[in-house]
Length: 94
Image 1 (cartoon, one colour):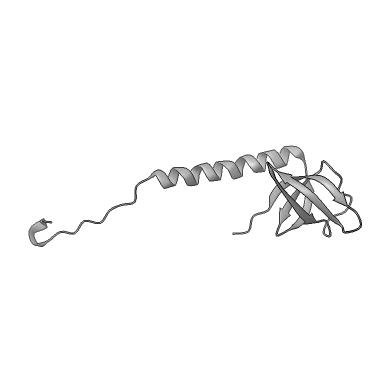
Image 2: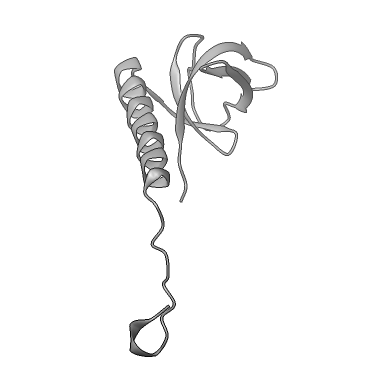
Protein backbone atom coordinates (compact mmCIF):
# COMPACT_ATOMS: atom_id res chain seq x y z
CA UNK A 1 0.00 0.00 0.00
CA UNK A 2 1.27 3.45 -0.90
CA UNK A 3 0.63 6.23 1.53
CA UNK A 4 1.29 9.96 1.20
CA UNK A 5 1.77 11.69 4.53
CA UNK A 6 1.12 15.38 5.22
CA UNK A 7 3.91 17.47 6.69
CA UNK A 8 4.60 21.17 7.24
CA UNK A 9 7.43 22.94 5.38
CA UNK A 10 9.89 24.48 7.84
CA UNK A 11 12.51 25.80 5.38
CA UNK A 12 13.17 25.93 1.64
CA UNK A 13 16.42 25.72 -0.36
CA UNK A 14 15.44 27.45 -3.61
CA UNK A 15 18.72 26.56 -5.39
CA UNK A 16 18.30 22.84 -4.72
CA UNK A 17 14.48 22.89 -5.11
CA UNK A 18 14.19 21.11 -1.76
CA UNK A 19 12.54 21.77 1.55
CA UNK A 20 12.77 20.57 5.11
CA UNK A 21 9.49 19.39 6.56
CA UNK A 22 8.35 18.50 10.05
CA UNK A 23 6.03 15.68 10.96
CA UNK A 24 5.72 15.79 14.71
CA UNK A 25 9.27 15.66 16.06
CA UNK A 26 10.65 14.09 12.86
CA UNK A 27 12.35 16.28 10.23
CA UNK A 28 13.09 15.28 6.65
CA UNK A 29 14.45 16.87 3.48
CA UNK A 30 12.18 16.47 0.47
CA UNK A 31 12.11 17.50 -3.18
CA UNK A 32 9.81 20.31 -4.36
CA UNK A 33 10.31 19.41 -8.04
CA UNK A 34 6.66 18.35 -8.50
CA UNK A 35 4.94 21.43 -7.05
CA UNK A 36 5.10 25.17 -7.57
CA UNK A 37 4.97 28.14 -5.23
CA UNK A 38 5.48 26.25 -1.97
CA UNK A 39 6.21 28.43 1.03
CA UNK A 40 7.41 27.94 4.59
CA UNK A 41 4.41 26.98 6.71
CA UNK A 42 2.55 25.24 3.86
CA UNK A 43 1.39 21.67 4.32
CA UNK A 44 2.28 19.19 1.57
CA UNK A 45 1.57 15.54 0.92
CA UNK A 46 4.85 13.60 0.81
CA UNK A 47 5.48 10.32 -0.93
CA UNK A 48 8.93 8.73 -1.40
CA UNK A 49 10.72 12.00 -0.70
CA UNK A 50 8.67 14.19 -3.05
CA UNK A 51 6.00 16.75 -2.23
CA UNK A 52 3.04 15.75 -4.40
CA UNK A 53 0.77 18.75 -3.75
CA UNK A 54 -0.14 21.38 -1.22
CA UNK A 55 -3.07 20.83 1.14
CA UNK A 56 -4.80 22.97 3.73
CA UNK A 57 -3.85 22.75 7.40
CA UNK A 58 -7.34 21.37 8.14
CA UNK A 59 -6.95 18.58 5.59
CA UNK A 60 -3.47 17.80 6.94
CA UNK A 61 -4.77 17.56 10.52
CA UNK A 62 -7.73 15.41 9.47
CA UNK A 63 -5.43 13.04 7.54
CA UNK A 64 -2.96 12.80 10.43
CA UNK A 65 -5.84 11.98 12.81
CA UNK A 66 -7.01 9.19 10.50
CA UNK A 67 -3.47 7.80 10.30
CA UNK A 68 -3.27 7.88 14.10
CA UNK A 69 -6.62 6.06 14.35
CA UNK A 70 -5.34 3.35 11.99
CA UNK A 71 -2.37 2.90 14.32
CA UNK A 72 -4.72 2.61 17.28
CA UNK A 73 -6.74 -0.02 15.45
CA UNK A 74 -3.57 -1.98 14.71
CA UNK A 75 -2.68 -1.89 18.42
CA UNK A 76 -6.16 -3.12 19.35
CA UNK A 77 -5.91 -5.98 16.88
CA UNK A 78 -2.66 -7.05 18.52
CA UNK A 79 -4.53 -7.36 21.82
CA UNK A 80 -6.92 -9.94 20.39
CA UNK A 81 -5.47 -13.36 21.18
CA UNK A 82 -4.72 -15.62 18.27
CA UNK A 83 -6.91 -18.71 18.12
CA UNK A 84 -5.09 -21.69 19.51
CA UNK A 85 -5.16 -25.06 17.92
CA UNK A 86 -6.23 -27.99 19.96
CA UNK A 87 -4.95 -31.41 19.25
CA UNK A 88 -7.38 -34.10 20.09
CA UNK A 89 -7.01 -37.80 19.91
CA UNK A 90 -9.52 -40.48 19.18
CA UNK A 91 -12.77 -39.91 21.05
CA UNK A 92 -12.00 -36.19 21.53
CA UNK A 93 -9.29 -36.77 24.14
CA UNK A 94 -6.17 -34.68 24.27
